[in-house]
Amino acid sequence: MTKFSDFALAEPIKKRVAEAGYTTPSPIQQQAIPLGLEGKDILGIAQTGTGKTAAFSLPAIHHLLNNKRRPGRNECRMLVLAPTRELARQIADSMTGYSKGLGMYVTSAFGGVPINRQKRILARGVDVLVATPGRLLDLIDQRCLTLEKVEILVLDEADQMLDLGFIVPLKKIVPMLPKKRQSLFFSATMPKTISQLADQFLTNPVQVSVAPQSTTAERVDQKVTYINQDDKQRLLKDFINKENPDHMLVFTQTKHGADKVVKNLMAVGIHSAAIHGNKSQPQRERALGDFKKGKINILVATDIAARGIDVDGITHVINFDMPNVPEQYVHRIGRTARAGASGISYSLVAADERQFLRDVVKLTGVKPDVIALPEGYDEPPREEVAPRIYGQKPKRYGAKPTRGGPSKNKHGNRKGRPGGKPGGGSGRGGPGSSGSSGGPKHWNNSTKSFKRRQARKSDA
Ligand code: AMP
Image 1 (tube, rainbow, N blue to C red):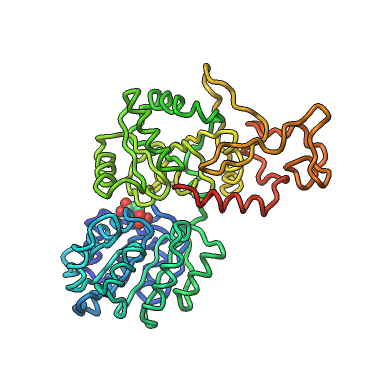
Image 2: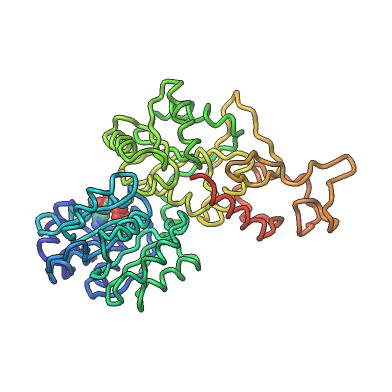
């Protein structure tokens, strides 16, 4: 097995790695570090939690150290682009640690905090800048930063960048970079849009990837309960009281939803904090700090805010709302399976979220265990309900059957079943059938992708 000592990394870097307590390189590190040291462009498929920060940072620091030069005013030698403030800060912290005592200046720049301090730091020039795309462009527009001297570019969590609508800023950034550079591009998933974006950044890249996403999903003990939306809060409270979790991360689909969960938990004497895009940077940092220190056991987050949460030892991940993009589910539950650990995920699935669960099962190939509702809860409706579009009330899928039989659409098929498959029965999608059926036959793709697009635009 490869050890860190086998890599051609400068000795002081190996020392920092040992101080960080790393003994064995993770799979992505085994693949990417030698390629990075050769100066190759890399297209990496890996999620957070796989050790990819060190995979791209260590060879880059080696390069910066071996070709030492003082960065000019308003210049950076290495640029790392990250989708969220939390992730940008986390990468900058890790890189500061890996390069400690090597005379390197690492800084981060993101929105939500005053820009002037960032301008002052950049005025002197920095070795490594970790930035979110929006703030980066602000700094460039204000002539406080030039990308002309970037030697190494890293684009991290590209799929999240696209989800957050950073495609336009990224396209603006590409032409500002020098042609001769090393580029490293990481994404947890690689749909066509992402590989097209990668083409713009990379030259003859070598592709590296770690085990498919389902591997993480397999390490997590996944549970699901079908429930009425209005009962979720009560079940969450009961679950917390029963499990008494050490480090529980609760995901909601909206910022408002996250605040509501915290408020309702507070009302029953359970202390928690929310972290999402409407919280100020100090509020986010306080919530995260309290969670890390164990001052609070429960953190309620939206997907975007959760991206940069690097907390080891998360014992439980709760999907208070199911994510409408299945890859997001894998990111979420992966929070509890970091560095080979295992954990519990528990999804509360309302009738209009069953389709999202089916999408998840299709992606991961893992069927979560169904936990029956405890006594005292009403069973949720079992009929098929259209997938939720956040911000709207759930709708019944197709018209209610009338006495004369199911209503028909203009093609003479049952409404909501464009294929007009015979024997549709009652159209049930209850616990018995959901979670195991893969994609439903009656979904017309264009409807599905339209709803997905709508949902992605939703408040997150
Ligand atoms: P990342 O995927 O870069 O966010 O890293 C996930 C976590 O794994 C971080 O807490 C790192 O400090 C830790 N880590 C990274 N590489 C190693 C390694 N080779 N051995 C042990 N822990 C590691």
